[in-house]
Length: 122
Image 1 (cartoon, rainbow, N blue to C red):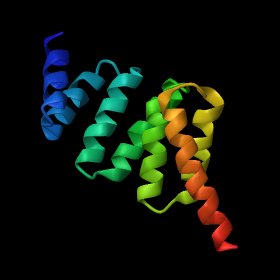
Image 2 (image 1 turned 135 degrees about the vertical axis):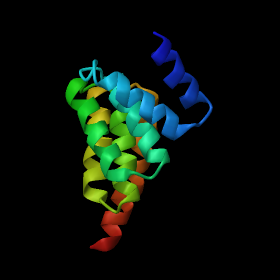
Image 3 (image 1 turned 60 degrees about the vertical axis):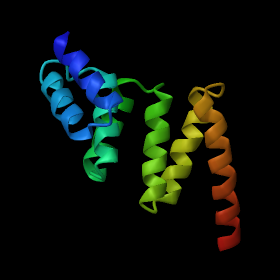
Image 4 (image 1 turned 180 degrees about the vertical axis):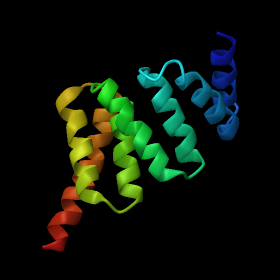
């Protein structure tokens, strides 16, 4: 329990490297935990370790397909790396699995912008 408090405190204070190290330690014994993978991904995103962050976001979704915050973070990562089709699919997935979550409203806005962009490309 002490380790958990330590990584949560590090997250709250924005100490991404410390939080990531502590979460990685905890993942050694709790690799099945989607929340740990998600929080590690957030630390990695903040540290601009995008490939590793994507890996942990995908692992989060495998372990909990309804984890809309992970889907949204993954979609945002795709947008940031120019992978707009993949972003479109991830944002769309949120609307299918959890249409009433706050992430769904944000996804609607992103999807509309992507639709407009795709239409202008034709």
